[in-house]
Image 1 (tube, rainbow, N blue to C red):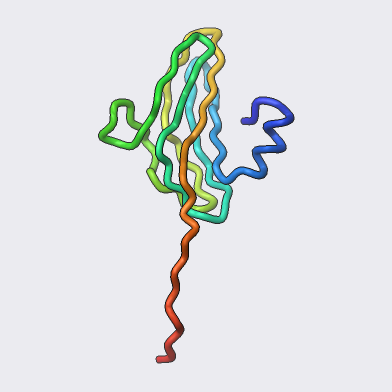
Image 2: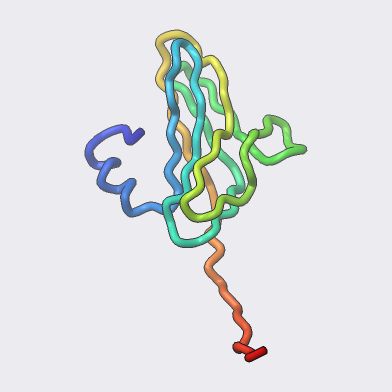
Length: 110
């Protein structure tokens, strides 16, 4: 979910959208690829108003995420669930590269 009206309009122009969904006291982090290209996620930064910051990476790194390292266009995946400190605000950012190089063969009639 976007944080303010400015981010809501910016969100429609970005390929990757990170969302934090609240359910009771738990938070779940989702990543959606709304672009045209495959994205390679490198790191997700999660910060909290309580002062804690942690970095999610693919296995076998320290704090690993549960979602795929590559997201196909139109794909949404759950990456992490945790219980933030009571009363804190949390926000996340994803670092990624888009794979936009394409190679194709000539057609052959069979």
